[in-house]
Length: 592
Image (cartoon, rainbow, N blue to C red; front, side, top):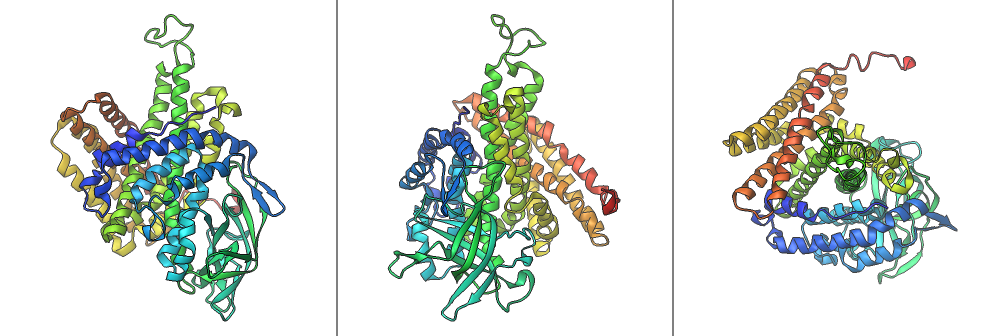
């Protein structure tokens, strides 16, 4: 069976050596002393490895079962959920006014990575609840907040998001779910939603569905979509649960992975709903949840790569296969361990350099969300809006790639279920699809985010990279290993943006055909920036006499690998982009 050990030391390095959280002028960050964050991350790590990880394979094998309209979750899930709730983990970064602990979002993201690596399907129950909490917190009335949020913070009640219908996914303007006004401020919601994660289960007393629907008589298309709170059980004025609402699970989807999470078809038959936010502005309110979810899904991608990598390293050190071409490293045994072979090293270094870069990238993004929410920093908000599709799209594409790369280290055993590597690959696969398929993320990045507010956010990103290079140059070895590759990659990214500006207006397909390459190019530049930051922080630590020299030397060596072996991919992506749309669009539909 696979194992998992929380990478607490690496998280601490990012928080304190790279982001320097206690030095930032962000409300609440002064509490994030190293001893404090270490205690939280260590405890979360224990729950992850001792409670959640052993249930991962249970959830995969048992799945969820629908019986008489009720979904039964896998053995042990409810007890574990109760333990997570009792430990206050679901309330970590929630508003104290509603029972939360008020910790910064960046710390919640670090804990979330641990829980996700240990058991992705399990963590989705509370993760989706947090997203629904955020949407109600941002857009709800005072009455709605007081009614729902305390129970959602504690996860006594859980939450969902209901967007997709059988005939429409990305194009939500085609939805048919209707909301009929009742004259008393409520609406009757009728329609069917599919792919609803945690739509029905036995781990909470109530489930608060956030449902997109069209109010009768409203505008056509996406402009007529509104968002509604539709609880499984209606809530009485005193906060107690009332009668069952007109919402029921129709079936559970049989999926490739995340078997421990109940992905449901939900049927709404005149269910009572309450408008969240403004009429016909449902997407604005839903995007609060969707943007948080997209960052969470990006995290899922690299979190699965992390746990797969950990197990691949163990296997590569234990499995004896062949001899080192430079001389036996295990002369007393029949063969040397796999890890002596250069191609295995290449594979593992690909995984390691990606995962550690992705972790820094995601925590950096979470840090900017804190800067915006806690300090009203609009510049930070602009950059995090720009990079959200990159976090989601790039980290999940690469997360799946490296989960399968870890599987490859096992050879034939990686294809056998008892070794557990298959589950990481299968679970990671969905991250490229849900919360907006990655092709849509690329279109969002190129079609909307680059030009947003006159392009000032992408220019701010380029300035950020340029300023970092200028402020940190001067050491010849560091410049050559980190800053020169970052500078070259950033120039590639700028050249791609210029190509879109010059060619996208006369033929939009020239931009759209290159959008996926641009998203990956942007992802590489972001990880390059993170590795330049981490390389510098590691050098400073060594110069300051840090005791754990092996950790920092390993960090520098891993960063050099990424800059030399991965970051040059930006040149390939630029070449593809500059080839334009002609070859992409050359075939008639009938010729595919």
